[in-house]
Amino acid sequence: MAINEQNVRDENLQILRFVAAALVLVTHITFYIHDRINLGSGVWHGGESGVPIFFVISGFVMYLSGQKLSKNADGAKRFLRRRIARVFPLYWLITTLKVTIALIIPALILHNRPDLLSVIGSYVLFPMLNAVGEVRPIHGVAWTLLHEMLFYYVFALSLFLRQPTFVFTSLIIVGMSVIGLFVRAESALAQVCFNTINLMFVSGMALALGYSKGFRLPKGLALTLLGLGLAILLIPYVRDLRHYFVGDFHVEGVMIVAALLSIKMSIFPNFKKLLVQLGDSSYSLYMIHPILAPAICVILLKFYIQSAYLILPIAFVSCVCIAHFVYRYIETPLNTRMRNFLEKIFTSDTPIHIANKKLP
Image (cartoon, rainbow, N blue to C red; front, top):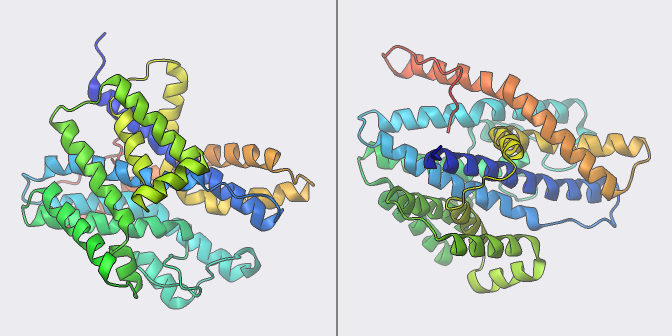
């Protein structure tokens, strides 16, 4: 049977979504262990590369989906409706939970305690400085959504103006990054706009542009790039070399995504299927783990379990399993209702029923 190349691509990207979320999860669990159980326990920073990988994937997927909308007069509105329906429902739920916890049991929130303005800014995902001068919403990990939404707004503007999405969006994002080299970012908005991490979206779009034109890496080169990307991610010395040569540009994220777009993984089909399913729930995992993982660490401490080697796998597996439940029974229904609601409000067409349709 011939292998559908688009299915291979989509499966690999879904697996990579889970890997990226899992990397962030591992880093944060080591931080929670250090912060709440054992100050002598080290924090693994390699998982921080999970966020740039997310951004590269986002740039890739948005470019391809944008190509389908660029010929539609309502392309920009359709694009934003889908993005809002994908990002906000679960985020609003988690933010509300976080604010409620902070109000009822403030001792549980060790960092980023809310005030009225920060709560409002958090709900609309407008960049604001918190009490310690960081650009973070109430739900801390949602700082990444500030960059995602910036990218979405610029991309939607290119659709609205009927401009080539790659050229227009890249010029805006690269231009803001260049300005940031010469202008000190004082405000929270400027810090988000001028941050070079936004270049990861451009990298993802560039990969999508090449992919859409039929470009594929030779298998040997793809495996080499994958190995180099993993080395940067896993080995601190190699990561330091990356920082020395390219600064804060997370080239490992580009390498890993580019490699997996050109590699067909046909071994262990059942395990691959499981990873694809976990990739579907990667957003839920990313959103809920900052609440779940610390709670699990504290509960395990109550049972006198203090070893990081025990806490890490227990917290990891627990978060992954609960996140998949949240994806199926909370995130997906919320997204469906939000998308249908937006369809009813902003279009006169018959609302589209999407109960069984996944949002990209």
